Image (cartoon, rainbow, N blue to C red; front, side, top):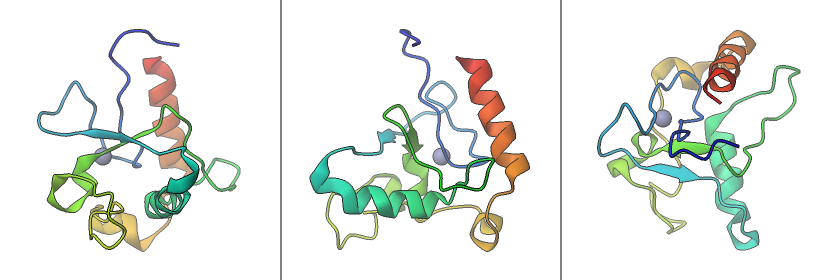
Length: 114
Ligand SMILES: [Zn+2]
């Protein structure tokens, strides 16, 4: 495990934001808390990532998503808020499931960084 502060990287496919190259962007973890399962599931669905073998992608406790995908540049804990889940993605992202190639390149990149 990397003990330096480096390592906050957005999990959204093709989003290049990291803590080091952005200002005023927050990085949120996927909550592991039982009472936040609903929010977590919604985030996973919104991110729409797939593993290379086609299985459903799951975030781990180090996975982060940046605030640029949330309306108002901030997440909300209120289930009825439009910022309860990430909704801001590039147009192509919503049309097709990110290709394995993209996902693989992102995985390769984050492996290099560790
Ligand atoms: Zn991002």
